[in-house]
Length: 135
Image (cartoon, rainbow, N blue to C red; front, side, top):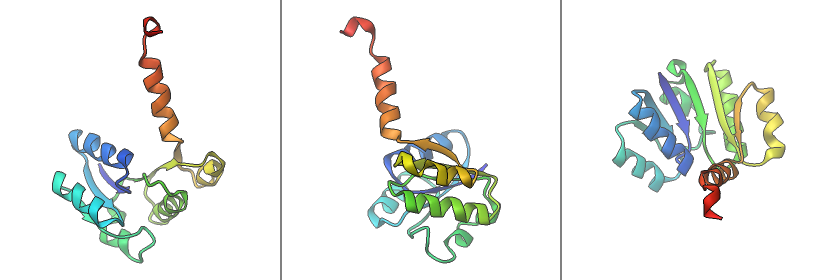
């Protein structure tokens, strides 16, 4: 499966590792030069240092071949742009983090699978891992 990841946030970077461990082909679009370079040094994937709104970046990333696009930035407007463009390129699977819960419906109207407030989800999971004996 070919997956385009937008954003090298901690969640995006962790996703890249998991997907590579499972044999997927990946490309990353990341505007921050240091983050893009860090991912490139760690992983053998295509890295495009650009904003998702940069004209033609999805063409360069061969979006017409992508099976999925995952938006993992801390900016809901960038994530929404990635999902809108993914839809325009007829990418079958659209997945996005949504940082502000009030934006959820905007993503869902595009048919996006959403993960709302990832920090809270991780915190809840960590809390559940505590045994009752810890208290």
